[in-house]
Length: 236
Ligand SMILES: Nc1ncnc2c1ncn2[C@@H]1O[C@H](COP(=O)(O)OP(=O)(O)OP(=O)(O)O)[C@@H](O)[C@H]1O
Image (cartoon, rainbow, N blue to C red; front, side):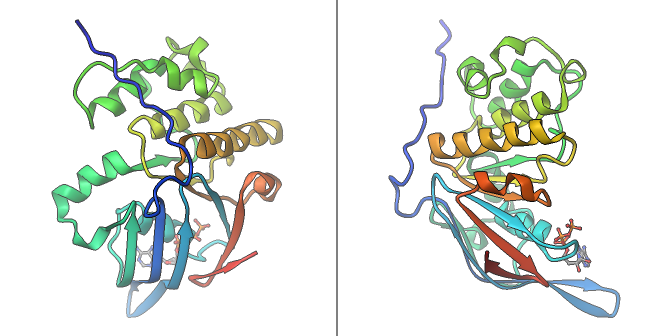
């Protein structure tokens, strides 16, 4: 008999160490002879169940912020904590495992695997982290995509692909969701729908979400907006 494992929603704000905490984070990157301060003493706390939008001009450091929050890049100084764990304490193997289970990534245009059905996109992401059968339907239902579970990415609209990307990022019940320009390939109405969905799922699943965007029309769905300029963060 297969044991179906589903992920129960986690109520927001139930863990004091939940979410994302950046304290005094600096990231220096080499650029030829000179050093670029991609992040300059950044402090940012995103609580479980909170959606924080990050805006700012090109080159301001927004991608760098996602890279350090997602354990893709180590910091030059300062600390990054995800669900209470200081990322600097993790070796390469534990860091990779941690990224798989604690962090969800949503990319610009879904980044789905072309050959897989919608349901299998979720099954694969789950399988990489947890053994055992998994029923993707409740989560697909939660993003309004259960009726297209058997379709492949080429048969979906841009907005639908993003919905599947959001579901896939939530499959392992991560503490942190990192979202990079989710509406860059979408028209205005679909952009609103996708970011509204992100906000709803953030609140319902109690995940700490950071969304980088150039799209000022969607900022109303964020709980908070911060602006990055020259590697520094300030509240808007
Ligand atoms: N690998 C690298 N080596 C050297 N400098 C880098 C590297 N990656 C980024 N930078 C520099 O770090 C700074 C921040 O870049 P980052 O990509 O984080 O900005 P961004 O706000 O995401 O920009 P955009 O909105 O254009 O994506 C920029 O000055 C950039 O040129």
